[in-house]
Length: 177
Image (tube, rainbow, N blue to C red):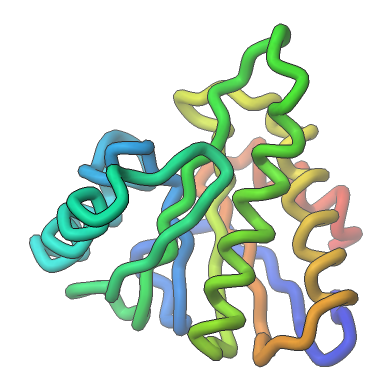
């Protein structure tokens, strides 16, 4: 799929192996690493990412849900890691969708400021945070599409990288691949 001058790609794989300017980390608010994507990025990226996250924590006290911060990528093949905190799914929280939308928009805004040309997104909040996968995929794709259509940016490639088969199939259906 192409939106203006940006190609949207879908890959099944491991985000820590992707050679792009920036990868997005589905972080927790502490920024100190955790499970899933967050843990893999911290493990494979090395101590430099953790040290930069600690400096961000000391400066601003972590990262709130829906917001994003960035570090260098340490030992990863990317240049930057954009850390965003997705919402923990709850039927009672009517702000889930907006918070997840904010994750994508704020990550793309940082990418714009860093003048990156390529970025890769994981399936934010669909693991231990239990966001319904189909709803999360629609929010991700619509948020990225909206940003690309309305903002001036340097992005040439946006990659959605799915670790599991279910997310990969959902993104294929929505993107029409």
